[in-house]
Image 1 (cartoon, helix red, strand yellow):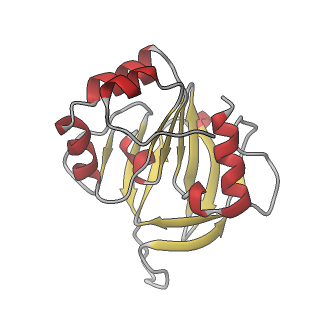
Image 2: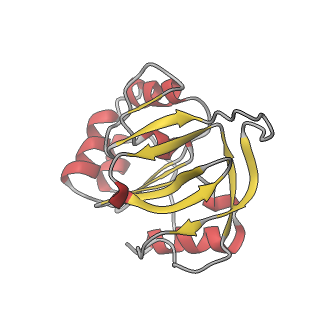
Length: 178
C-alpha cells in the first residue's frame, strides 16, 4: 500500500485515509497538532468528510477527550478518557511492554474475531471507553482494558500493528481497504 508521511495540509486534505501515529506524551502530541495548524483539517477530514482514521498507540489516546498524562484536551472524536495503569500489588511493570493476546469482542472491519492473535504493546496509559459499543477488542494486563475501538469512521489500536507481524499486517491491510 502506498503511504505518505506528511503534515502538509494539502496532502491531508486529499488523503483517502489517515493514520495518526504516536510515540511520546499526550500534551506534547496534541500541542504539536495545534502548532502545525493541523487541528481544523483533521477535524474536517474525520468528522465532516468521514474518511477512515486509525490512531495507533498515543495516536489512539489523542482521539479521546483527555488523558491523566496531561492537562490538554484530546481531539474528543470518541467518548473516552485515557487512564494511567495503576496496580496495587506492584507485580506488573509499567509500561506494559511486549507481546500480548487480544480478545476480539465483536465483528468489525479491521480485525477478525479469532483466538490467539498477539500484538506488540508499549504503553503506560490505556483508553477507557464510555460507550461499550465502541470497544472492538480488549487485552488483559492487570485488568482488562480496551486495546481497539471503533466509532463510525474512527478506529484506534493501542498496540503497534506495524511491529506485530502477521496479525498487525492484517489490521493495516484491512484498514487500507476501508
